Length: 325
Ligand SMILES: Nc1nc2c(c(=O)[nH]1)N[C@H]1C(S)=C(S)[C@@H](COP(=O)(O)O)O[C@H]1N2
Ligand SMILES: [Mo]
Image (tube, helix red, strand yellow):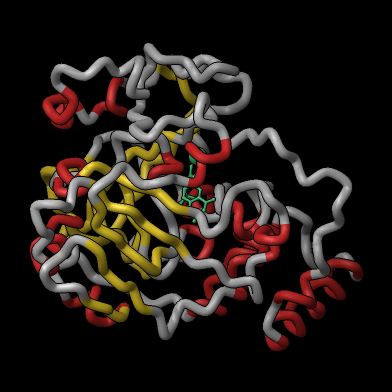
């Protein structure tokens, strides 16, 4: 996302500061090979991705396709979905997460569920993997910056988890708090956002069956740069609502603070539903570019209301979506 407070003039750390030794050593040998000209430059990014995958111990995840949640658009190539990312904790360039996120340790990992619930609990990733049957769902994800992807995610409706913790009648909103690991996340040094990255939904949005507690993509566990080991995908909202690498889910009475809304409240509203009729103050939201498919010179494709997920419209009946952007 375009940021106002650019971390200008500050050098990023050397990768050796933030990378486990084995990964660093193997990278050094790659670099030596590149210097010798034995590896083509175009293969570089692909290797960075595989390296990140190896470090996270990528494992296959089997899931049954849920045909009610499959868009017919062409799927984004895996290579694009895992090398063009927003994950500011690892740097603000699209290529930074693929390069840097491999250092993040995703096991052991727990998610604590707290606040206005009758049964607060702390679940580890194995418990989350077993909580409900895993489904594959092919969703569009539209970034507020004007690009989109089509990704086969693996997970189950967040409502399955919400049922288990039994929210009280005071639970009007849900806040997602993500990991803040100073050891591996070099981006945390820069005050681009108020860390940790937080997001939130109204309880009925969180309970909508489309809202996916996400543990994998493309038949495997999530790559680190895509938000391992667990994230949320809210496909009718701009991509920044889909918080990565979640460690805490809080049920609260009042609308919670969210990172992008705190950073620029006039630009990023709490709701942030995809809406081609409501422009960002600095650019139009009427159209988008599909990553891996549309070139920079291709005519952009029209953006759809609620990103095409018209089944959520009833959540907002009677609301002025220009005011509640
Ligand atoms: N923790 C965290 N979650 C995040 C972000 C981030 O910077 N940090 N970026 C968001 C934005 S702006 C987008 S568009 C999506 C991108 O998800 P992807 O890289 O898997 O396509 O992640 C969202 N989740
Ligand atoms: Mo985004």
